[in-house]
Amino acid sequence: MMAIARPYRSVLYIPGSKDRALEKARDLPADAIIFDLEDAVAADEKGNARALLAETLASADYGSRAKIVRVNGLDTPWGRDDLAAFAGMAVDALLIPKVSSPADLDAVAALVPDLPLWAMMETALGMLNAAAIAAHPRLSGMVMGTNDLAKELGSRFRPDRLPLQAGLGLCLLAAKARGLVIIDGVYNAFKDDDGLRAECEQGRDMGFDGKTLIHPAQLAVANTAFAPSEAEVTLARRQIDAFAAAEQLGQGVAVVDGKIVENLHIVTARQTLAKAEAIAAMDAT
Ligand SMILES: CC(C)(COP(=O)(O)OP(=O)(O)OC[C@H]1O[C@@H](n2cnc3c(N)ncnc32)[C@H](O)[C@@H]1OP(=O)(O)O)[C@@H](O)C(=O)NCCC(=O)NCCSC(=O)C[C@H](O)C(=O)O
Ligand SMILES: [Mg+2]
Image (cartoon, rainbow, N blue to C red; front, side, top):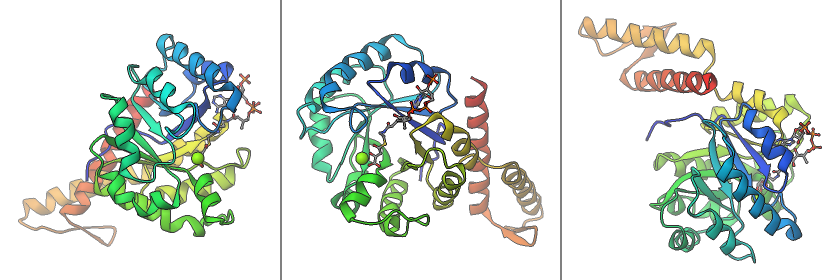
């Protein structure tokens, strides 16, 4: 498993057609931005949004935020033109919607020789093929599309997301097995902070790197939920110190707060500290 090199606590969707939102995002505390040409843009706005976004990304400075463009699928009238417009741009990745099999990524990879690809995981077939999709050599990230997934499953929205757990778990396993970034789906009720917090906590507990968001008001909750807390950082330091002291005595196990600490826990502790440092560096920019 590969440690993530940059934080992805908050990944904000911005409709590529909304110039005010595109401008505002330059100053928002998002770790990454998904510039969306797919579902957030109406059919008769697709061409204008593509042109506006290409012009914006060529000229605007989004600082250290990761820049990801979600294109339309190749099975739509706009997919090919989207890929042509952004294949040579200085963005961090292209996000491909509704990826159901590695062949969907092959088709994009043939048209985009260089950029890393990310996959929207949001179809029933995509859940079943998650391991094969994650193994694609051009893939570096996955994003859960929980709205489309719920639509395909015919499931109801529940606070515990029980109907989605199988899909979330399969994609998480697939991504982690290949060292990919994996981001949880959106929380639609963008004025409900408590509901968002609960869903972020659930995603963090499961192992997601962060959450996709639809409104700036959701940033603070996600940034807090997916960062190591002060207590976690303090515990990580104490575990590292205690284990080092145990090793000095020729022992392979330490005890902290009544719990054993072995070498594997030190790996996690070091990852916690590395993540906290990466976040501090991000927040300082
Ligand atoms: C949800 C919204 C339509 C709400 O828009 P609005 O009513 O304009 O919100 P506010 O008036 O509260 O906005 C306040 C200011 O914030 C800016 N703003 C709003 N949203 C964003 C944003 N996403 N990024 C940046 N800035 C944003 C407004 O411009 C206002 O600025 P100011 O004028 O200075 O006050 C709207 O938030 C929205 O369109 N959100 C994005 C929706 C979207 O991207 N949907 C597609 C992705 S979700 C999806 O597809 C998931 C997946 O595929 C699945 O299947 O699950
Ligand atoms: Mg979707």
